Length: 359
Ligand code: COI
Image (cartoon, rainbow, N blue to C red):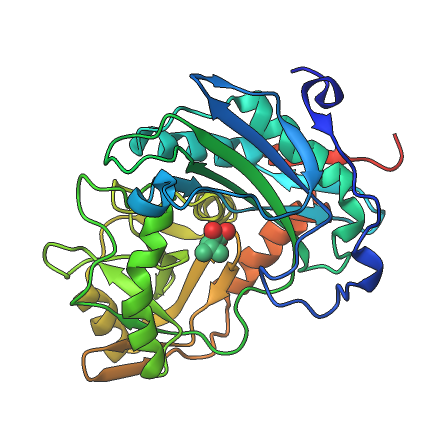
């Protein structure tokens, strides 16, 4: 791979905004670092990428992304250890998923060296923005969208790929209760549910807002055909512990192929937990709940990490999850985070160094 300094034009900010930023009190996704990465695709080729000061990017009101939703994104994080070393977690997975999403939306793939070099250079440049606390991180948001100014329902000619960086603490706070959705659907077979397409999230807002009014924080999406099988929650994949078995739905063209999900399955299996990747019905979950065998539900995702669900609502029933004596979610969360924050050996090679203080 080319040296990022040769590949990317870098225009540094004159005055950092960091001194006036309180990194100990952050609302997720509201603060952005000094710089951002940007690369445009025009006239059939990629232009030289840049890192520039964080700023609004002008776009015509006729830009295709606004009309046809041709946009995909990623979510990933950079982690700082006690010595100030900085790591990414399995960034190759996000890069490949971004391009799978792009292909599904008929967009040209983003060159891998742009993605990786842009990510690493941006993180290196803005490393002082990474909160040092265990549990905090720098959330990275690659976003890729159609910018041709033409009202025509066909793929855009021109595109923009941007990476934003945002210091982050927890995504969810407080109790997380989920509701099983049987009316609205998030994804259908043959659709774009597996892609991190921007529109997948907008399509969830109405149902989620309705559920929030009933006291829930998220929805458990069920299959669009029968609403019998559990699939995923809006921003997370889901794991159910029935007795001592962890069950998670197989990924499909309707379910996001979560990097955290895949890592959790591996960690659970390698640490002697019984894992079943299989279809699971709402009935099976609720029967287990009624019989006192539903021990835990947790979500997994980059923003959410591993998130215990405290209660589940289904039709007129509501089931409060017990406080488990043996807590799989917290064990798995610690194992995962210890690798991410360089507190434990990484036998898998998941941790990718970006800044190493002592070499
Ligand atoms: C992530 O977990 O990183 C996501 O992209 C979900 C997002 C809606 C915060």
